[in-house]
Image (cartoon, rainbow, N blue to C red):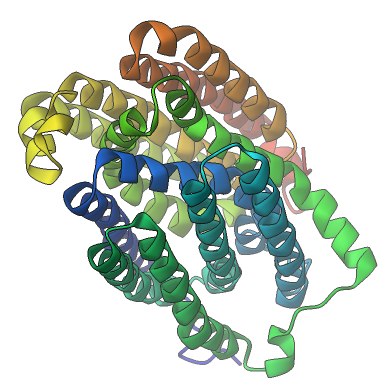
Amino acid sequence: MVTQEQKPLTLRRNFSWTFIGNLVYAGCQWGMLVVLAKLGSPEMVGQFTLGLAVTAPVIMFTNLQLRVVQATDANKDYSFSDYLGLRLIGTGLGIFAIAIIALFSGYRRETCIVILLIGLAKAFESISDIFFSLLQQHERMDRIAISLMIKGPLSLLMLGAGVYLSHSVLWGTGGLVVAWAIVLITYDIRNGLVMLKNRSRILPRWHLKTLKKLIWLCLPLGFVMMLISLNANIPRYFIERYLGEYELGIFAAIAYLMVVGNMVILALGESASPRLAKYYSAGNAIAFRNLLLKLVAIAVVIAGGGILFAAVGGRQILTLIYRPEYSEHSDLFIWLMVAAGIGYIGSFLGYGMTASRYFRVQMPIFITVAAISAVACFWLLPKYGLFGGAIALNISATVQTCISLGVILHGLRKINKYSGTKPEIV
């Protein structure tokens, strides 16, 4: 029997909660960069964002995008315990890999410690994420939103206090670890108990045969998410190597304003994914197509607003939010918003591919995109500096969006074949 606490919310309410939660959380994440820029220097911003750039691809890979797989598991092929068991294994391997990278990367000592601490924080975040997928599967995005609204301000407070008291990004990052651990232990795990109503069902399970099947299903998505993260961070790696942590701090702080629109994309994509998966599983091509078209139309509107926002008031906005040295790159701001707009459309098409269980085909797509991004950065950054990094992002986002559209059109032509059966995983 489904209780009131387990009863799914409507798509509109799920979107509203997800948008508010992501708005607060992304605002607080952005606030962290503002705190570092105001209390510290572009070098500190660069150091922190380099830590994020190094750890993100590793964690994205070891997460295997289990959240999306579980949330779109309309046939309940695997239990929550299976997903949790695999996530714990992946997180442990991820921390080990990050430690190896940090120790042998050649970065200075303080930067290595920052990388390790961010990796540990992301480990706690990964475990929270698997509980989020359980809530998303039950269409209870309100509980995810509340978790984010607790974690965001707490993270900002802990990082800000650490930087203010120590004048070092090191202690601020340590505060981030503590904040994310507290939210996982005190709130996210409790939500899992509410959904499952049975303490034994919330424990991890390591059944070898089941884990092998689940890994085989999710491994392509793990590679895809790693490649997506690499694609977003490749310009940062090249900027750090060619131009240094100061220029990386400038680029990362301006690029983070792309997240404002991405909050809406994330909220809509996560809220609509279970619905898209149900439409596709049922063979309802018209409903699937119409919902995806609405999402893409919203992405176009957000993209246009972001570009206009950067073109009209970019210099004043960057001065107000950060410091005068950031406003000298207002042209960079415009091109980054163009790349963001193209990426918003590509993100919704990506949600469509995943909801229709097109998993393995995404791997060659994003290998291609990442390779193009690396070549573009290698060619453009030495000649054009930060502007070259923005152009590289535009090129890679355009390629990703065009190929993803081709996959969606192919899936729509085949959708009737899957009516009443499990969709083929390709």
